[in-house]
Length: 138
Image (cartoon, rainbow, N blue to C red; front, side, top):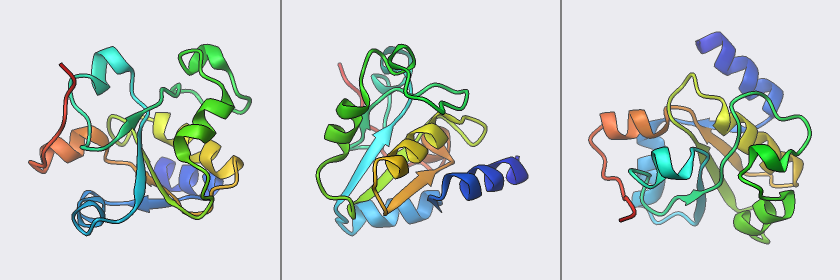
């Protein structure tokens, strides 16, 4: 898995964060957009990193934008969610290391011109495993 992850990161051109690094950024009040790429009903609604916004991405590599794979949302919808500042820190995560939804989310942020993009590869599984708080929607 480490080799696969390394290759994805190299190919995607984004950075990577550990659970502790992400927690420290949030604790420090860093201006960051956190994107949860998991399905809304099955995952995000139940638990997500506090402050994270949901935007579904598929597991297989999404070379071309496919709205069928993103809950009907367009590439413009994603750009709007990420915001107008191309230098703003963007952190994308999904379920766990093997999950590649976050790879797609990070790659598309880079394609849209964002330069400060990170993938939190541990995902919600590692976040909860570390005992960090999560939000849910009623």
